[in-house]
Length: 277
Image (cartoon, rainbow, N blue to C red; front, side):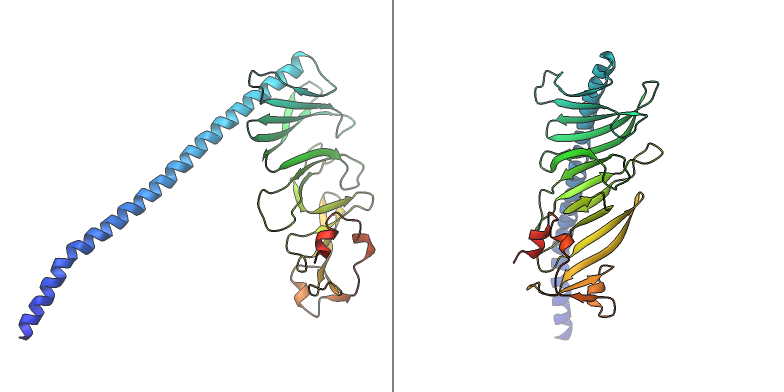
């Protein structure tokens, strides 16, 4: 009887083994197919992005050819040189950042993309690309030339807003113009207000009211020093912790308790969000 039982077990496993093997092979095929599909999508996106980039470069080359053929040294105008009326390039030329060198700003709008270029124009007329900043129509808000760090020299600022997120997030890319006639890598600020005369940036970080801190930074040339963060103690916002680093609000030894927010923050753009209840 025992041997008969063992025989039944062996036969049962033997009958089900091909089925299990077939199931495993089917899962492996589906997994490989999904992986191939993802790879194909990535390749397709790369090709589309490459074609879009070639199209944009062609548009930029047309705009630069127009500038050179018309010998423009001062200009602030919109170009529509193409049969496709959705394509446009705004050009701005002049001594925008340096007293000695001219620069060219190109704002290229092709399809759904807004791409910003800055070229330095050498005394020989040669144009050297210094900045390329790529945006979609959904995120780009605007840009401006202004002194941001209070050194008396204009910088380049791009304002953008993410297309998704839970909380207030008005972002700025700041490219500082440097003494060697180059631009810094961009500084990315969230909900900032700039005070160049004080060399300060005040703002509200990203997060929910009642949790998110205020911040204050100070420019040190082309570097940025953190002065303080101010966290609400709780959602009532009747008491606050002043700290120097993220996380210090949790350490009684590193935080300072205050009962009101300093008045200097009342005039920043994100203060209403910080105090929202």
